[in-house]
Image (cartoon, rainbow, N blue to C red; front, side):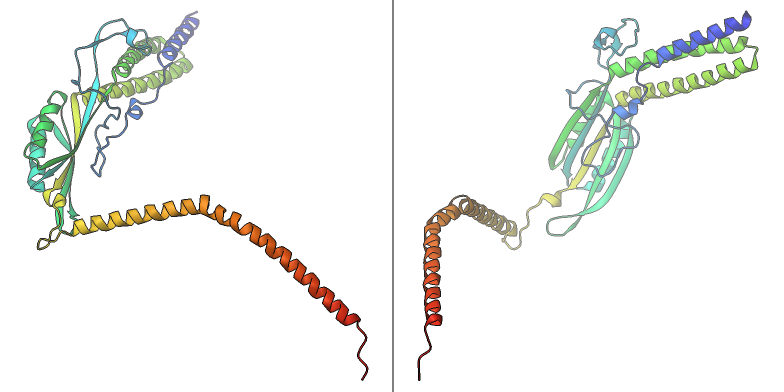
Length: 326
């Protein structure tokens, strides 16, 4: 009887665990696209969210209940804070790239964030002058994202591009919390069954199930921690461009870029005219020429046939005539 009770409890625990894992178990990391932007490197800590949406605080005060999503797993309708992952990409032209790079790194540390990656390399202007260029990815507290962007743009020669992105992951976050609660309940029941099991086979089976559920618990906890940290710290991808890169070329008052522009415009006009001519020729002029030449070709064929027939008749008459007597 005791063994039957143990097996019954084991079956109940497995059914409960199966319900907890009935949803999709793919890692939430796969749902978030990698950080975009102009920087020629990838962020190694937290990928950035791609869908564009209005800027908001990392955890806005708007409430979210189980009625907002079908994926909450039956949790009580308690309001939760929204989890929004925010990121930004910006490209600025500065007078001193290296000094500006150091300022941005210090800015991230001052705001309580950190530098994810930094890259300083050499680029070239249009007249082949070597100038520095840099890319850097930093993370700052989400509530200071706007302030960080303003300080990055401060004293910049030009802001070439700027974009903001955000992703609301509240539904996924609530779903993970619900799954974690169910997995921990199943773990507790399996532990009780393991403590009371006496048969070796039962102990091994329950222990294997317990190991599996503990692995799932750690995985879900990691995903929850990722969402919390990604929402708390926003990523900013920055490209620093040297001021010399955007300066026009001028040699003793002569601006070759104007000549090059005119030459390109002339080439484009020629290509447009040539393309228009070819279109008109094949769709109109060619058929007009064919229609005009067709009657002359027919007359030519008829005249050639008559000429050949006449020449053949003369040849036959000449061959049929008796040879002249000497």
